[in-house]
Image 1 (cartoon, helix red, strand yellow):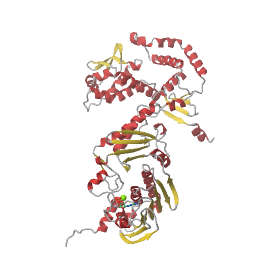
Image 2 (cartoon, rainbow, N blue to C red):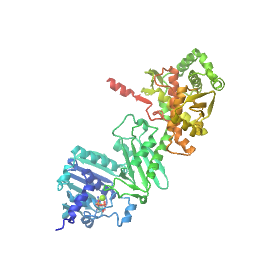
Image 3 (cartoon, helix red, strand yellow):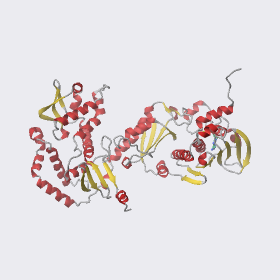
Image 4 (spheres, rainbow, N blue to C red):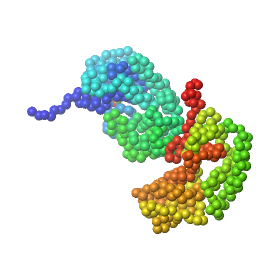
Length: 600
Ligand code: ADP
Ligand code: MG
């Protein structure tokens, strides 16, 4: 006797059901997608015991004729495609004609459906995938599907279902997800006859996002001949702490999908705007010619294959990056928030007193640049500070200062200020200055395609470990572009000039740190053309110079140094994170403080 048997149809469908219908939320997904494909403008989902006992989906879509109703639960019964090529131009959610057949196989099911102009609707009753009865019902345009006792005939699968609260959450999550691109449809969900939500029709995705996720989003776009992308993201400065609830949902032609390339593109685009390890809320909608994607690669159609993965990457990345860069350029909102609580007069008086007491320093400042060129030995670390006060005075004259009240310094590391909203801001002095320097250097570099050099009258010699020496010889021109003129000796290097942007002569130790940092950033595994290296490296190198050239933590600051740092910080495009992605400002609102104290 042969061991091999051909499985009967019912068994085949039950096996296939495992792939499409895993749990109550998969039933909701398939039924709601059918309602959307049927052009419904209202979809009501009612569940009992989180869908384990009953799932009903009621729509006001096109409905089905009696003949179609009889056919719709047969395997491979679909009105959406006729031949295989059709799936490469598909824009409907369904097309395989298997959902109703499989759900019917693993539950007790009723379908009531009627066409617009028919006198009656019809009710089809099914058990174990087989038609039990079909009877006329009252006039109704649309389709109602009731699914009872899911998996009653596959106990093994029933055991895999989780708690009611878990299954309910899966249903809610999925309905929220699908409701976003379908903002022209009213969605309602009832659990045990309690209304869970009622998403009214909105004018656009942004409004639906507000309604569903309570998120105020910014819309970014990118369009070209192949792909259009729309990304709705929340302002990175709103991300105050690591949030488990962060939402990132991606849609291709309005179909929710999982895709690593898109999440990678989001993190890349936000890289210098939010602290490492944090995620922004982002909803990505990609519209692409269906011809160049394959949606038939996953049983639940949760993944998509695209001819070139880069398409998804650049469409997402470009939309977000352009929008962020632009947003921070004309973000005057942030700046106006910081308004003085000290009157201008008080400020000027304080400054004048300070400057009068420091006349000697002031004289030094005025000669700073000459000194740097002609009399290097006279310079000391102080010069930088002096230059600062000079600028401070100029800024005051130009009436160009950001206004707020400085409260003091905490732990010689944080500047404390109070803004007009009476929020308490703690500003990390080192990263604040680093952010300002970095943007400054980047501007200078982008204007000149290089950093100007400041010749040293007495070149500095630095001992260098052998493994770094060959980097200096091989990439001499790169160091030159960034302002360092370096010659090689046997086991040391001679630094003849330094980047003028440093505004001071660093100590030997500092200089060595800067140079080795650059060496470490030059990726020697990849032999690139000099131009490419420079472009790849400029952010890293300028970040490193900015970092090394900024006031360190644990340094006592005068009120004027604090003011300069804060003013400069608020001139930057992105005052909230340092170029390494760490946060710069901690904001405690009046409400938070009063709440903690128990006053409100
Ligand atoms: P698919 O969606 O892949 O075509 P389904 O098994 O989900 O397969 O549905 C089979 C067919 O039944 C659909 O193609 C459609 O013609 C019809 N149908 C299903 N649900 C509805 C509905 N809510 N309104 C109108 N027609 C429906
Ligand atoms: Mg379907």
